[in-house]
Length: 186
Image 1 (tube, rainbow, N blue to C red):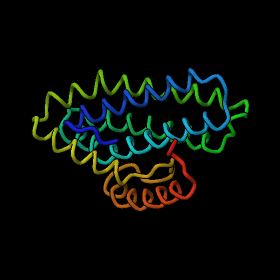
Image 2: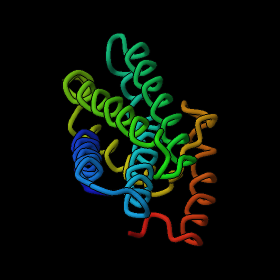
Image 3: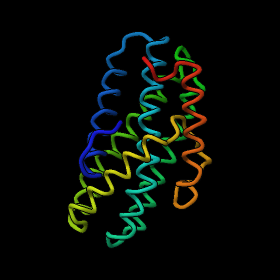
């Protein structure tokens, strides 16, 4: 969850963790509680990651990269689709025949998004931001992930300032629910 380094290193490490979760899901032969636990874990990671990107990465993209508004809007739209899939997965029993296609759609959407960020967005940001600015953004992203929600909230605001105000409150409620239910502790 908090790895260290600048924003690009932090988020790239998150991307590798998500890919690892996907590999574990694909290797799973059964379903049941083991699949539910993995889906919960990848959901927690994706939601925290998305919230942090929406709070700090995309505003930096808007500010520093030419055409940044268009790029940030596209990434936020990607997040919206992923969040809707996560919400569907949260409501779907692991034995439901819709589970496998939903998981495959999630993995496809997220993998495409990660690749796009790493090949297009991150290099552009690296070119226009100082190492100090990227380090500062990395610190902010780590703090945001620590306070972020752990469950999908598709109707929540995804741009500042509303997302920076509301996300910590939703995160507190989500973490309390997770503590009571044991979610995310596998």
